[in-house]
Image (tube, rainbow, N blue to C red; front, top):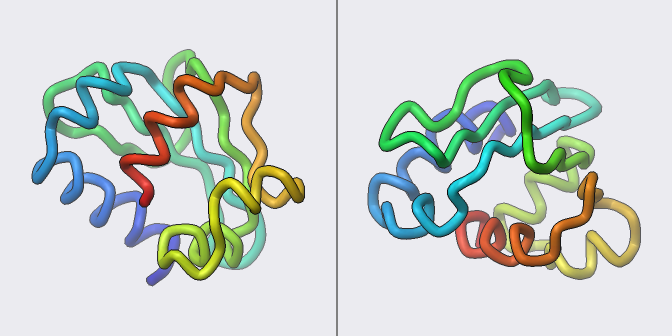
Length: 108
């Protein structure tokens, strides 16, 4: 599944199915996905709908950076997010472990 589809379709579907995850995250997160099929997106879990938009909109609590290939592997569970973070394939800035753990529920 392409990064655009993951962020613009799959993530909103997951938030619609389990709105409690979005309420728990309750933050704005920017995604900086590099490489072919990459781009920038904003996930705004402070809203009750329309969570994902293209580009980096507003001030975020965290920015997540990964290559498109690694991001796709993480979402499809071919690569553990924890392993990706420990090997530098998945980066969080600033690192907020609590928020990262909440995001793991949405991504996993």
